[in-house]
Length: 156
DNA sequence: GCCAACGTTGGC
DNA sequence: GCCAACGTTGGC
Image (cartoon, rainbow, N blue to C red; front, side, top):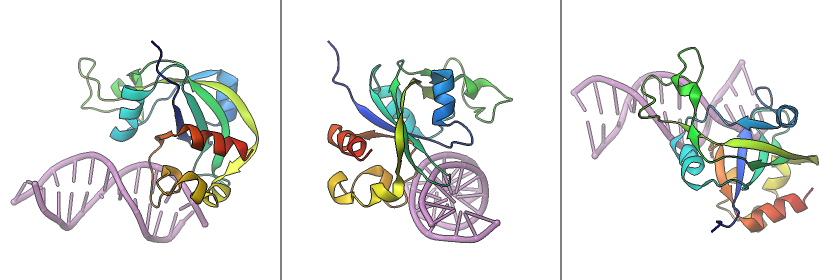
C-alpha cells in the first residue's frame, strides 16, 4: 500500500545550501529545521518519493530553482545533539529527540528561476492561502497541492 | 542593513 | 495561561 505522492516546498538560503550544492552532493539530510510546524510535516507526512520544490530564500532573486525528492522517512536530526553545532538543542536527548529531518535527493535544476515576484502575480490561480505568498509567512517547509505543483512548474 | 511579522521563552 | 521581551526569518 503506497500513499499517493505528496508535494512540498522547502526553502534554503543559497549562501548556506543551494540547489548547486544539492546537485553536487546528490542527497542531503535536511538538517537545521527548528520550527515545530515544519518538523511535523517532515516527521508525520513526508514519504519517500514525494516531490519537493527547492526554493532559494534570503537572496537577490528569491524563487523556485529546482526540484528534488524526499529520499528517506524522518529520523532524528543529529545536529541537535552536537554542542558545537549552530543547531544544537540542549533540551534534546537521544532518548527523546526533539528535531527530525528527511533526506532530500536532487532531481533537476529548472531552466530558469521561478521568482517569488512572478509567483505573487498568480495568487488567483494558486489560492490566497498558498503559504509562499501569504503575508508574513516564514515557514520553511510546507505542503503544495498537486495543482499548485503543476501550475508552478508550468511557469518554467 | 532595515524592519515587519511571527514563534518561542519565561516571569508572573 | 497571559503576554512582554526577545530572537529569527526573509523580503526589500
